[in-house]
Image 1 (cartoon, rainbow, N blue to C red):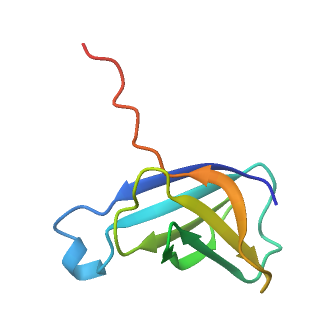
Image 2: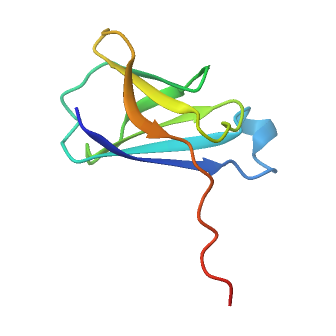
Image 3: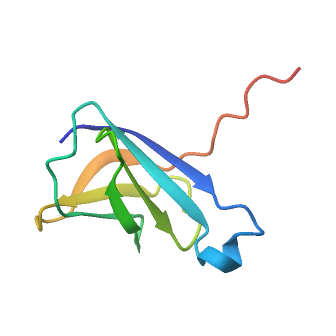
Length: 99
């Protein structure tokens, strides 16, 4: 499996009490992931809950209870294998140019 992108989006404040999660994560891949029936992950030291393959099979998504810290590594396990470091880490989003 070749995972290429990690995106972490904070859950809006008004939805946090309803969802009990701080952020949703998306993990992009350059291969189809549909064939994987069982996927688990950790971002830093916390489990990624509700992790699953998105409908088109090109990405994974799930939720974390606490916003990750900069540098937290993403580790993924496929079909009951051991967690493997993906080389992806959480980074703060680029704020873009000042205008």
